Image (cartoon, rainbow, N blue to C red):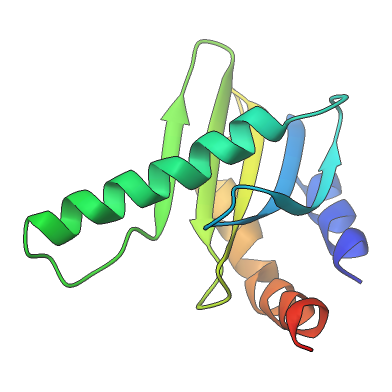
Amino acid sequence: MLENTLQLISKELPGFVSLSVVNVAQGLPLVSASNLDSNPGADAFHASLYGMLNRGLSEMGAKQKIQSVVIDSENVQFFSTQLGDTGYFVHLISEKNTTLGFVHAVIRKYEQRLIEEITKLTTV
Protein backbone atom coordinates (compact mmCIF):
# COMPACT_ATOMS: atom_id res chain seq x y z
CA MET A 1 0.00 0.00 0.00
CA LEU A 2 1.02 3.58 -0.60
CA GLU A 3 1.06 4.45 3.10
CA ASN A 4 3.50 1.60 3.77
CA THR A 5 5.81 2.77 0.99
CA LEU A 6 5.90 6.28 2.46
CA GLN A 7 6.75 4.80 5.85
CA LEU A 8 9.62 2.82 4.30
CA ILE A 9 10.98 5.95 2.63
CA SER A 10 10.68 7.97 5.83
CA LYS A 11 12.69 5.34 7.74
CA GLU A 12 15.52 5.42 5.17
CA LEU A 13 15.99 9.18 5.29
CA PRO A 14 17.92 10.70 8.16
CA GLY A 15 16.43 14.05 9.10
CA PHE A 16 13.01 13.09 7.74
CA VAL A 17 10.28 15.65 8.54
CA SER A 18 7.40 15.06 6.12
CA LEU A 19 6.54 13.19 2.91
CA SER A 20 3.41 13.47 0.77
CA VAL A 21 2.14 12.25 -2.57
CA VAL A 22 0.37 15.32 -3.97
CA ASN A 23 -1.99 15.91 -6.90
CA VAL A 24 -0.30 18.42 -9.20
CA ALA A 25 -3.53 20.03 -10.43
CA GLN A 26 -5.28 20.33 -7.06
CA GLY A 27 -2.40 20.59 -4.59
CA LEU A 28 -4.10 18.05 -2.33
CA PRO A 29 -2.15 15.17 -0.80
CA LEU A 30 -3.30 11.66 -1.67
CA VAL A 31 -1.36 10.29 1.31
CA SER A 32 1.20 11.65 3.79
CA ALA A 33 3.67 10.51 6.41
CA SER A 34 4.94 13.15 8.77
CA ASN A 35 6.54 14.10 12.02
CA LEU A 36 4.37 17.24 11.83
CA ASP A 37 0.70 17.63 12.69
CA SER A 38 -0.13 18.91 9.21
CA ASN A 39 1.55 20.15 6.05
CA PRO A 40 -1.10 21.08 3.46
CA GLY A 41 0.26 24.59 2.86
CA ALA A 42 3.65 23.38 1.65
CA ASP A 43 2.02 20.69 -0.54
CA ALA A 44 -0.31 23.21 -2.17
CA PHE A 45 2.53 25.69 -2.63
CA HIS A 46 4.65 23.14 -4.48
CA ALA A 47 1.70 22.21 -6.71
CA SER A 48 1.22 25.86 -7.68
CA LEU A 49 4.98 26.22 -8.14
CA TYR A 50 4.95 23.36 -10.68
CA GLY A 51 2.17 25.13 -12.56
CA MET A 52 4.00 28.47 -12.60
CA LEU A 53 7.32 26.94 -13.64
CA ASN A 54 5.72 24.86 -16.40
CA ARG A 55 3.87 27.93 -17.73
CA GLY A 56 7.16 29.83 -17.71
CA LEU A 57 8.87 27.09 -19.69
CA SER A 58 5.97 26.99 -22.13
CA GLU A 59 6.13 30.76 -22.66
CA MET A 60 9.84 30.42 -23.45
CA GLY A 61 8.99 27.81 -26.07
CA ALA A 62 10.49 24.90 -24.13
CA LYS A 63 9.01 21.49 -24.87
CA GLN A 64 9.83 19.95 -21.49
CA LYS A 65 8.13 20.04 -18.10
CA ILE A 66 9.63 20.58 -14.67
CA GLN A 67 10.70 17.26 -13.14
CA SER A 68 12.00 18.31 -9.71
CA VAL A 69 12.01 21.34 -7.43
CA VAL A 70 14.34 22.01 -4.50
CA ILE A 71 13.88 24.87 -2.05
CA ASP A 72 16.42 25.48 0.66
CA SER A 73 15.73 27.29 3.91
CA GLU A 74 17.81 27.89 7.00
CA ASN A 75 16.79 24.68 8.79
CA VAL A 76 14.97 22.45 6.30
CA GLN A 77 14.90 21.66 2.60
CA PHE A 78 11.91 20.99 0.42
CA PHE A 79 12.28 18.48 -2.41
CA SER A 80 9.61 17.43 -4.87
CA THR A 81 9.65 15.36 -8.02
CA GLN A 82 7.00 14.33 -10.52
CA LEU A 83 5.95 10.69 -10.53
CA GLY A 84 5.83 9.80 -14.20
CA ASP A 85 2.58 10.74 -15.93
CA THR A 86 0.41 10.04 -12.89
CA GLY A 87 -0.49 13.68 -12.24
CA TYR A 88 1.14 13.36 -8.79
CA PHE A 89 4.46 14.34 -7.27
CA VAL A 90 6.39 13.37 -4.16
CA HIS A 91 6.93 16.25 -1.75
CA LEU A 92 9.57 15.68 0.90
CA ILE A 93 10.70 17.94 3.72
CA SER A 94 13.92 17.04 5.51
CA GLU A 95 16.34 18.65 7.90
CA LYS A 96 19.05 20.73 6.26
CA ASN A 97 21.78 18.17 6.96
CA THR A 98 20.12 15.49 4.79
CA THR A 99 22.13 15.16 1.57
CA LEU A 100 20.03 15.93 -1.53
CA GLY A 101 21.87 13.25 -3.51
CA PHE A 102 20.76 10.70 -0.94
CA VAL A 103 17.19 12.03 -1.12
CA HIS A 104 17.24 11.62 -4.92
CA ALA A 105 18.60 8.07 -4.61
CA VAL A 106 15.95 6.97 -2.10
CA ILE A 107 13.10 8.50 -4.11
CA ARG A 108 14.42 6.86 -7.32
CA LYS A 109 14.59 3.53 -5.48
CA TYR A 110 10.85 3.70 -4.72
CA GLU A 111 9.65 5.69 -7.75
CA GLN A 112 8.28 2.79 -9.82
CA ARG A 113 6.55 1.30 -6.78
CA LEU A 114 4.96 4.69 -5.99
CA ILE A 115 3.76 5.06 -9.60
CA GLU A 116 2.22 1.58 -9.58
CA GLU A 117 0.48 2.16 -6.24
CA ILE A 118 -0.86 5.58 -7.33
CA THR A 119 -2.16 4.04 -10.55
CA LYS A 120 -3.99 1.31 -8.58
CA LEU A 121 -5.56 3.89 -6.26
CA THR A 122 -6.61 6.38 -8.92
CA THR A 123 -7.70 4.09 -11.77
CA VAL A 124 -11.37 3.28 -11.71
